[in-house]
Image 1 (cartoon, rainbow over the protein chains, first blue to last red):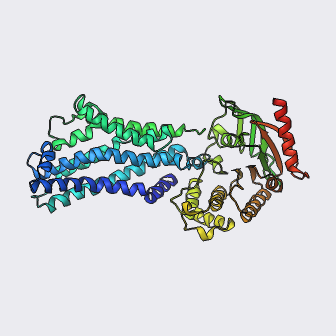
Image 2 (image 1 turned 90 degrees about the horizontal axis):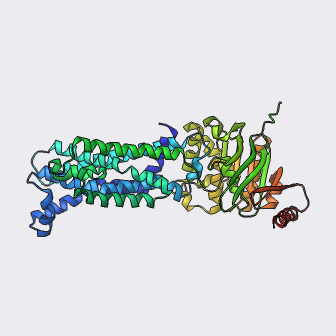
Length: 249
Length: 244
């Protein structure tokens, strides 16, 4: 493990933000979905009305849809906040100065931050999928739907990738709030995009893909998914580049 | 024994001025191996800006900074591994312990894990913070935070050390520890660029005292002189009068 990766891993492991955000995205979608489904089962009219747009009668697929839609929206906020903390805290905690004039370059540090972030997203996704299977089995659904589980994992991983502009925003604004603000803005714009340009808005792709287990009219095509992947990866590259050029006043 | 007289730090005609006139330059100064070069000046004199230029936190508009003989814009891992600093905006991580912060500093300065652990132990002993090794930095007093930052600047055995207001928050015992740490290393050939408001302390630690006012070098003070404070204010007053 390179020094930068080790250092960023230590900081992430000791950071409260890492654990709160991982727990929220890993457990949140399953908890909310199960609560809604149980309420609907107990003939709650409110719960039934909320579930109506997401359900087609296949219990595993419906659970994956619910968790995916919640995970895509909540995940964008949560992952964006994590990236805001990871990159922005160096400025707000005034630790950034210690990253200058050392043999480890700023590019290496930014790359290490993104690598640790990828690990956080991977672990979160794995726990979320495990929670999906546990929730379905606990509700006595028939044999597990592995294709739906895989799609849920892909939706969460894509959500993680689509949050990378928040790392760039934290760097550009030299703080945490720029990243959080951008995450909120992207989420709001994604909702507007659903009724306008659809999945051509890259940040709406994960949610659109999750909807109706990826079988509804808004399901993104391959080009739209590719655009989303390129957008997320592009902002990761831009963030590393910006760190390489970083100067303080 | 041969002594290398190549300066560990050189600033030649370095200029960085902001639109409001603040900043430094043009400025010339150097730090020789084994020299403690102190910079003194009033608030806003440009001491911190000068140090940021040396550490490439900002780029100069003109002139050249050479670190260990290499132009600062070309300095790479080999040069920066031999530089240590504790300047404004280089705080320790509050949620990490003292030992973790020092390990991080050691690893980022290129030390292998085992060497970083050893160096952290040595510097905690030198700065008398061994008992605080497992304490989170956020729970420390300002003085002990400062000791931690100084330890982080020194633990990889640098040849050039840049310290901005290192005596700030230190109690008298901490000031003595710092003075000894600087003088022992200077005797081994380490060059120091140190800024401070504490004129008495600077007189005890520094070999050369350069006075900065409004971003310019306006003179130097003899550290052996009888009344450092009077000499400092005489220089500043004369410069301010000349400028107005």
